[in-house]
Image 1 (tube, rainbow, N blue to C red):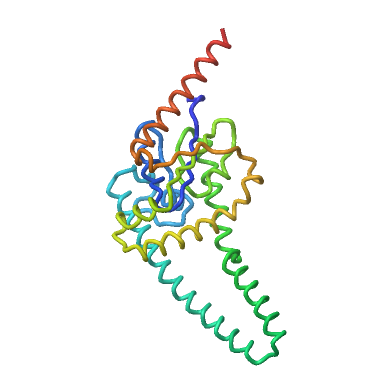
Image 2 (image 1 turned 90 degrees about the vertical axis):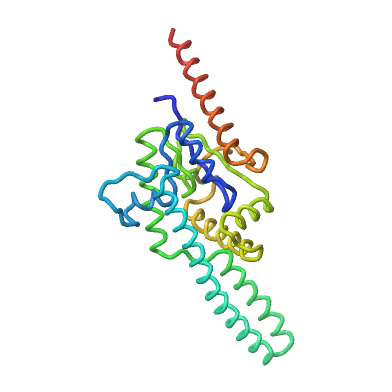
Length: 259
């Protein structure tokens, strides 16, 4: 057990990284911790039964958790639409104000206004409660990693967990593949799928910003696998085989060095 790795998987929305993690967990016999599981352990989601473990991958409860994730994405879409309407109202007020000033003042006000708007949209202030949630979940992730070999998917585990026995993996997919996956899995039209992907990417980038930069985390480059070449199942099998070979080789080298 001492030679086995903690595996941390990063992925973008609709890249099938979650499916790869579930398959990998089954192949290696290791628990998989995703957003739902970590939130439960952090006390943020009520447990149906006190002390129950995270739902096994592929179980009815896990499928329901995925459906809840989908519903949450749609709720966030509606909230974002409301925020966009408010931003448009703000932009309209700004346009009306600039019409009343002289030409030079109009250009300066427009430059400053757009600068502030871009800054607000790309680097929004982090609510204090979000930072507290991140800190609680980061502590849960560290404690789980200390307990033994497991698999994390998302939740910035790649920037939270460190050590020699940590394997960082990035599951990637081209934009067109992510779009296709989103349309098929969520039964969405192309416009809705693009919107969902963009908003989910922004939300995840905001969450990742709480963990600092990769340089701050001091982590090396991850193993990167493009799921579009082989699909989620085959990609997970390739990764599982790589992990087994890596761990077996290291165990044999340790045995030789100990003779």
